[in-house]
Image (cartoon, rainbow, N blue to C red; front, side, top):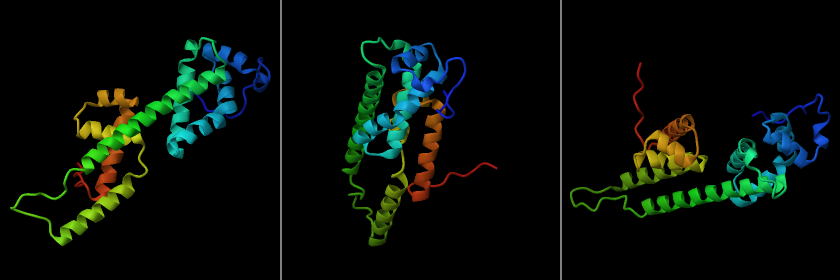
Length: 205
């Protein structure tokens, strides 16, 4: 699927003047050229709709791309009971709700993990002031490193290392490709190493 750029031309004439319904009829037949016109026409409106709900530019951009990907791939399922724009909004709304649900689950897991004591209650050993300071610095560095992560990347890391799920299952749950999951896991690991929360892995020669 291509991004909108130079407007398509040819025997169809100026597609930018076509109605949504006429464009969508061609999109249902698999025309990327007609889809690109719809994309350019409604990108900003769908982005604004999503951003108002997620309040994160990176997440909003990703969800917009997902929305239009679903629209293009699922255009044949459009029943015509509403306008094409209403259907696009419906797709965006469902994706936002799924995103917010995953974010809520992730936050609950983080909150639950945060209630576990960091200091051992064993009488055999305890942290000294320097150890406590190092822990606080590590936690601050970790927060700074993971602030830019997408929600699905953090979720994938949890599913892999806390629930020990295979890549294909993580791919299914996060609705990302296996390659995207592997890349995301690698990124999270690198951030944790940078924050000092993990030991760096030795690289093979």
